[in-house]
Amino acid sequence: MKCFKLSFVFLVVAQLSAALFVPESSGLVARQNNRFGGGGRGGRNGGNNGGNNGGNNGGNNAGNNTQTPDNGGNGGNDPQTSLTLDPSVIQNINGKGQAAGEADSLVSTNNFIGFCVGKTITNGKQVETGSCNPTPMGDIPSIDNMPSVKFQFPPNGGNVQPDTPFTIVMNIKGMQTGAFTNAANTYYAAPQQLNNAGQIIGHNHVVVEEIASLDSTETTNPRVFAFFKGLNAAAAGGQLSADVTKGLPAGTYRMSSITSAANHQSVVMPIAQRGSIDDAVYFTVGGNGNDVGINDPTDDVVVANGNDNGNGGNNRRRYERRFFKWN
Image (cartoon, rainbow, N blue to C red; front, side):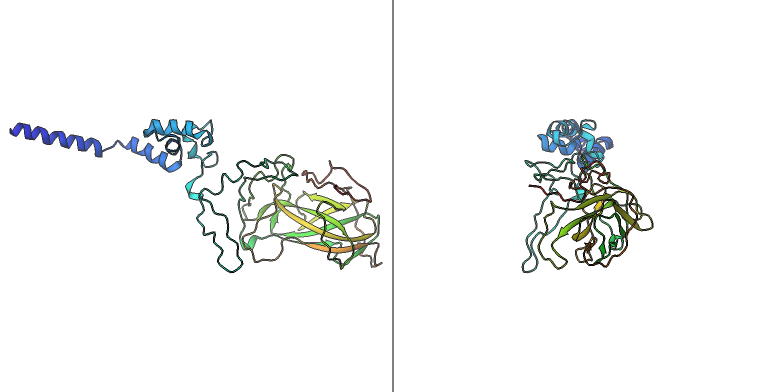
């Protein structure tokens, strides 16, 4: 009888030991799958096959939209190649308006990764009929690294001679200029990035539009402009320039800057209450006789096409002393 009881006790202890003491290697694999969203997460989403084999198989099968082919079930180990969302970057916000008149914000439990499903994807193109861009906003600078732009020439209220070459001069600070990607196939395709100094990496543009008069309050048509150029060179001495070698016809004009990250998206700032990053000035051509001088030109880029193809407009159609309007 005593032998029977002892045998029973040893049997129970053995079973408990097997259940409680899992080999470290198996436990580590299970924790990694759980942590990084590789095979473990894919396995849960793909049918809860369980275990290491089930997790990896689930990651490969459930996870046609979860893992890259090269990485298979362990693709989640590298957040830059994995097709799963790393839990550490998931936002947790209250989207309800807090004050009178504030609209509620959309909220998401997965950072809107499926927001563009069923819509036309931007996919690096300038889609004139509209599209949905799934690329995140990216790096946002500190308030001490917000860029600032101010035109030097022509000055606000100035006048230049009609049909006479001149050079637009723009002062800029707080940004690494001269970085622009191919706008034909990488438009909005990558997030905003910062350099080692915390400044936005990007470039600028200048656009000149004709208006009725200096005191006109009529809204303009963004599809109509007299001059456009991407300022793709790096700033020299804190200045960027654009040469208008054919000049402009007599009239009244608004000149504006468009400050962009490398992939052509407008720069994103850290706070809402701030001064304007971009500048706009108003000047006349052949108007008030108060000429402000003419700068020496070097390039002809009076253009009439809104596509910034990353080469300053040299491959775009050029229009001399006339404007272009889309129907």
